[in-house]
Length: 253
Image 1: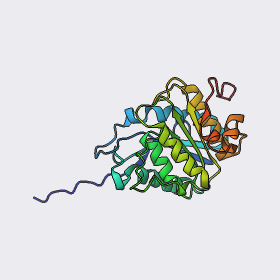
Image 2: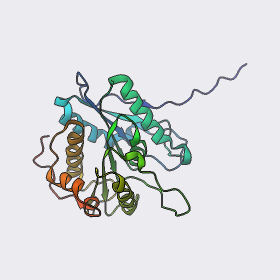
Image 3: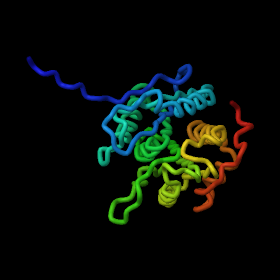
Image 4: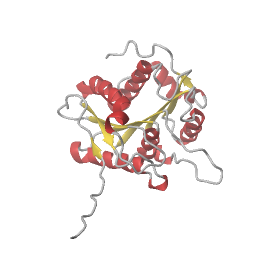
């Protein structure tokens, strides 16, 4: 009896979070966290919970402009070295957006290892904005090639990191942001003082910050003063911008 081949795994987009606008004028692709090495499938509900909260907020905020948000479901849980599976799946998702919706601006927004995927896949032609929350980045080794940043030229980039993060090193995201800023002025980084990896203590402020940034980049809304200042300030000021308690309390929910 012939043995059946195991079907190849494929990435996919989750359903639109909230009512899908007609027409769609912009897309946020939400990239959950993952592991450094793993051939297992992601656990869908657990892995995407925090991303869904962000996606729902952005969908509400951008619905008048035609914004839709989708969670990207990876093929594998792990980055897996040179395979960079999560980044490849993020690039596939951007291709899928173009196939479904046409020439619309895309924001890649990821957390942890998903933040690394957003940064790595940010060079896709459809991407205009990249958001990396507490991104996992490899240790910098003088004998190895550093994490690339050239692909971020021409994109608006926001990195957010808690200063008490013990899972992903905030100093590594600062160093990457500093390298990216040399070639791209539209890079900013906010520090959430005393917060950890999940950014739970200042969750509302982080969500408001991302909303402010994404709506500004994709649809031309005026940036708040802190975001505008962070983008305009030279390093290190614009890369160590403190996220103030209560940020965004006046933003439309």
